[in-house]
Amino acid sequence: MLLPTWLSRSVLSSGSLPPQPLLERWALYRIRRSLQVSGWLLRSQM
Image 1 (cartoon, rainbow, N blue to C red):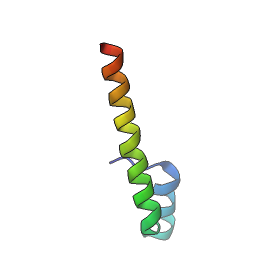
Image 2: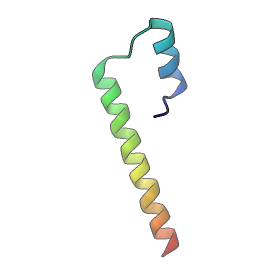
Image 3: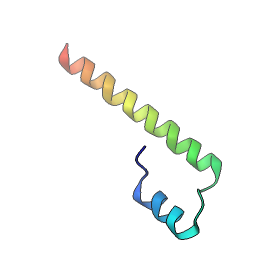
C-alpha cells in the first residue's frame, strides 16, 4: 500500500500513524478511486 508523502512524512517525524479516522477516510478514498478507475477502464474498452 502506497502512502501519500504527507502521511509518510508525518509518520516518520512522529514515529506513529495519524489518528485512526483519518487513516480510515484515506483508505476509503483510495478504494473509491481505484473502483472509479477500474470502472472507467471497463467502459473505455466496451
